[in-house]
Image (cartoon, rainbow, N blue to C red; front, top):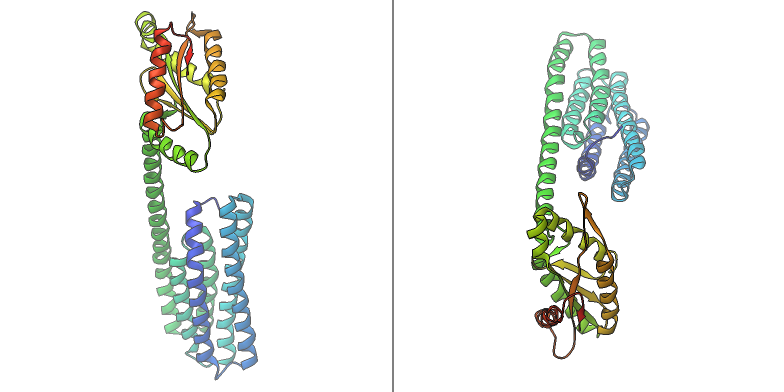
Length: 364
């Protein structure tokens, strides 16, 4: 029933308190106008039902809020049906107010009720248009009995009101539709903007080719993790990884194959590190991993495991079979290396030594 944008329901929830307070104020006004004519006990019973209706609507709004928070679609659907039922009940209560005016009050008090109901319908266009179909059910449940009541009296001014009502119906429906469309367009524009912001944020963090963190974000997040590690006296290590002879792969097979190697080396490494570790591409074929809560000895074990996996891996691209190796430099957080820049510089130095000593090795 309620296949609408969740933010439209949120808008309805926000409008509910004001709408119900307004309805109770109009109900008080009705009692004030008709207390001279309608028996007091009947007015009290009628008003009690209005209070019950307002209570149900408040509970309905609270339930909507809960189901939206938990993304419970079934709950939202059921609550939408309850919302429609409560609105039909509200229409019945105001139809009863018209009948009471017919039974107990002299003319032209039926016109007073008519004006009240038109006011309620118009105000509801603002508070209920977020659920457009539900509003239409409410609208016709309210207006159709009033047309029959005017026909019942059948005098010239009543017939004139029917004519005006027939003009009012499409005008109000168009108004409510315009409000609904405006809110929906605003929400969609906001969602599009939010998606664009999220996409830009994602692009500012992630390397487009390998889908791991980029250099800028690596240094940004590493500073925070090092501060936490220093405060909590935890160990932390850094790996600098370089794909050996990567230029030869590009020269011999082309950049598409080079990209394929980069992507698949990253995938193999990702399988062997923890989610708490920070893995980033910091250069063309250079990567770095910040190992959270890991000593240098633990980092050596992880490093050797990764090195062996890449060494043993056979990469196949369009019937081209190839293999590659990696060189790794390590550093750890200590009195000499207290910042990400220190760790990076030290690991890069060790990486250079590993490459100078023949590659396909790690150097702590």
